[in-house]
Amino acid sequence: MNIKLNQGHRNIIAKNARKTSPINKQLAELLEARYDIAEKIRIVSLGGIENSKMYEGAYNRLMKIRNSLPDNLITHDIGITVKSYTHLIMPPSRKTIMIEFKGPRICLNNKILMEEGGSLLKDLEESLELEGKYRKQLKDLEYKVFASISSITTVKKLLDSWPEVKELLPSELLQSKPMLPALQTGQLNSLIGLPTTKQGKLK
Image (cartoon, rainbow, N blue to C red; front, side, top):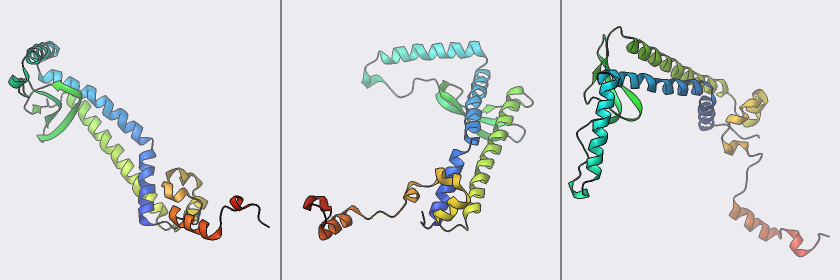
């Protein structure tokens, strides 16, 4: 394991540490929960659940008609906006952000102005703030791991000081010794007469 560490190896180890962190699970759960917020915002922007169902019914009827037409009459658009995301205008700064739905949804084709002081705005802001916190923690973790191993020069020294890091090593650093290229070993075997079992026992 007396293999030298270079900057590329250290970068991979730090990135693997970031990928392995349980913070990723928290982030994934947060983003999954945000789909619910996005769906509520979409329904409110359409005028409520009854309107949402009405528009969905209209969409399904139009799709049924569309599917009954010959291919040379069909266009890509049937007149109802269906997207997997929408843009929101956030008060009071009026900053625009994008929010994703869990799959394509019927939605407005213009930006949605969020209601200042509304509960959905509060839920969304808290979700965005927590996402920023998680992403910063992951970035800081990657930097900390890289800085911690920046002065360690070999895999052996790294494993001696931090045995658990073995799970984060790139595969090429897990080889116990350098492997000779296949072509070279074949040539050497031929010159030496290996394997000797083909020629009988050594005397």
